[in-house]
Image (cartoon, rainbow, N blue to C red; front, side, top):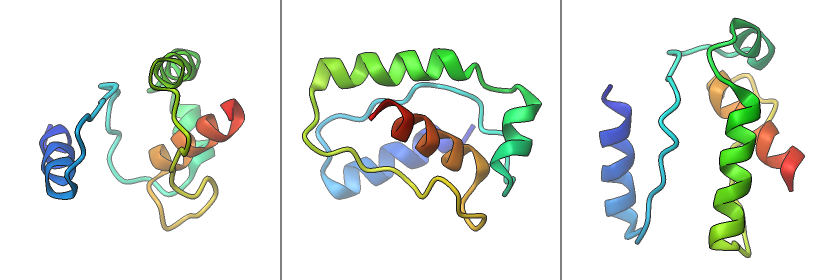
Length: 88
């Protein structure tokens, strides 16, 4: 997939010291988060656990995420935002 390399390039461009990619499938472009979740492509409990453990490890003071319910944003970004907001 081209996505991991794109993220690496963006992180480098912005000067991020660390980039963590969880490695979950990119399901292509979908706008509906509920439809994406219904496909069952992601183990959301696992993702919640991974994000929670990462946050405990790095202890962030700020967490940025995408909009959780905006249909112009990819559904998997919406779902990730919803998970983050549920956790924090």
